[in-house]
Length: 139
Image 1: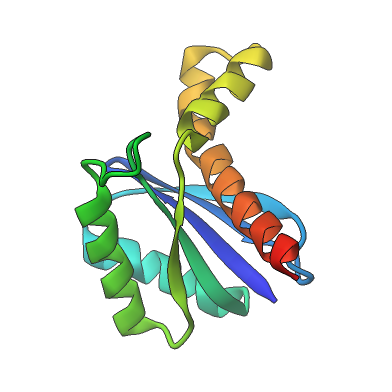
Image 2 (image 1 turned 30 degrees about the vertical axis):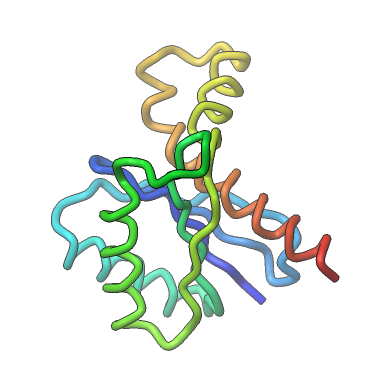
């Protein structure tokens, strides 16, 4: 089952896709945000083109588990996707994924400019990989 992972941000949407067996997450190109309608259209096209069976969107919770400032925006985006696709759209706790992505990129000695373009894709990979690992742990 192919799953699409999303790191939803105000400027960019990081996207990742699982392999057909649902084991490994790989990055897809970042989507530069325009408006919610176009952003949803972009994700819907990815779903159709890649036979996606589920969408996982990172839920930006605070460290104490309370709702972060982007939770409402993510909820609206998730609802708009649910209106357009006939597959499950779920959220997954993304605490620390952006920070972890930044740490990995710093360790890779990428410049600040290069990190900016890659961070969102890597965050989407981390969200999706965490979700895939959790699914396998349940089985």
